[in-house]
Image (cartoon, rainbow, N blue to C red; front, side):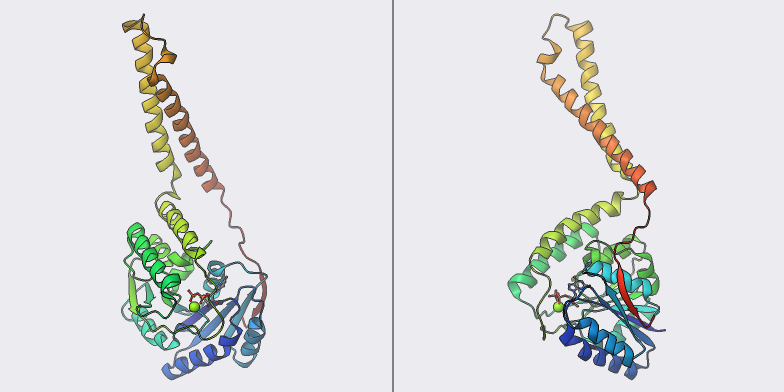
Length: 315
Ligand SMILES: Nc1nc2c(ncn2[C@@H]2O[C@H](COP(=O)(O)OP(=O)(O)O)[C@@H](O)[C@H]2O)c(=O)[nH]1
Ligand SMILES: [Mg+2]
């Protein structure tokens, strides 16, 4: 199979039929073999009803329905684990991303050997204050911390080599940082393609301003995870040892000074060095223990299910 189109969605009933028709048209014209995987993330409108209808008419349409809303990252994870195409394309369900981009994205992955190609909504049809400006700031911060030089990290339209989606773990709200996850997993040939963007035709946006607060916190997490998740002791252990050494140095100095050099001087508890020694030794020990606990947790990690599927269609 050439292409799996993975479409996570929440309450997009109005757009689905039109989207399906458009994708099929593009696929047929280019003679691709394909599947379309819709992941309904606990929609409360008619979305699942429409996906079921489409899956009866078209056996290339597959559906996954979550028990409740688990978030876009979880939906992508479910879609990725089912996808069978050589190239996996993700897109938004709201018709803001154009299926006409699919053939070019496909060729960039297959012929130009990209691991991942991210869409870039260079001309964006969303509100300037609520979306465009914060998004610029967000992308700048993401570029600085991750070293991945993309203009638009969070574009829903992306193409992946199959191996990439099978080997990255999109969790929490990490869908914003998939290129970073891919890079951390060793897929560093990451490209970008300017894509057409449309204004939202039906319904309204599901992501408000709070996404940026979450986004920045996730950025710190991902920076930390990508450097130290597999070896917490290297950070906490090092900090712990350094701080403990500083504290121990001060204690040694205070002891020698009091016992042998300046025996009639101030009491140790009256000297500021004593408190520095005390604080750094306590904090150093805590850092060390945190690192050690981190290592233990790492060794105990079992794969826990993060979402529950209610129905599946055509798999
Ligand atoms: N699976 C899943 N998809 C979601 C969720 N929220 C939004 N989406 C989908 O993500 C895509 C982009 O969302 P949208 O609201 O258009 O964001 P915007 O384009 O940045 O304004 C659409 O296809 C939505 O249906 C969610 O909680 N879970
Ligand atoms: Mg949208």
